Length: 228
Image (cartoon, rainbow, N blue to C red; front, side, top):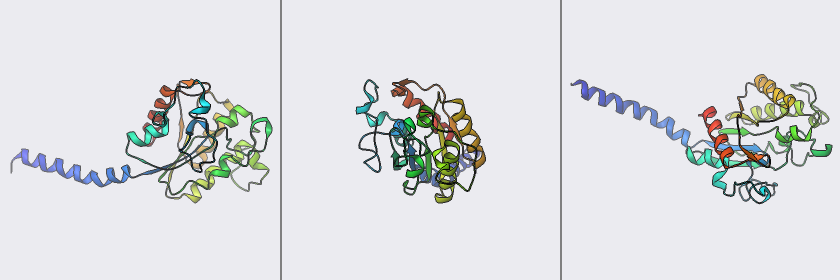
């Protein structure tokens, strides 16, 4: 048998061997637990969640759902959206702006409603930083309701819950640019403890503090590079 025929057969074998993995990856279901950066009117579950894009965005140039980071990620790489449980202005912990009680919208309140995902993308910490919520101490168990009004205990509680309740899902944290040093370092430390990959974004173009079209594209590219 000629070398040429052998090479062709080997090539076909490799392609067929890889095909099941490619098919499975293309069927991966992604759920998002986020804030305004991941919202878009008409694409949230539950639909009563507050949104920022597009109407609330004012002069922000993101005016089509196809321009959001998560829509780009899913449709450019053949993935499926399981659930987008994002809520504009939401903090991870139960403390919000002006030290108000945000337990009706916090990440830890919504984390039980993500469907049955293969991949969970948590895009949290931005509003905790902007609102100046209590930082708290590092705590990896025995949380009380009072503890969950502080960032570090709440963030740990969230990752612990996601790992336990979605055992078959890959979990990633996405960390925004320009957050306080305390929040950024806390996220990184807690992610390391739970062995959850932390996608630390770089150089995101923003308008009114929110990603522009170019910023959304950059987020999608950086997230894909980390999860692919």
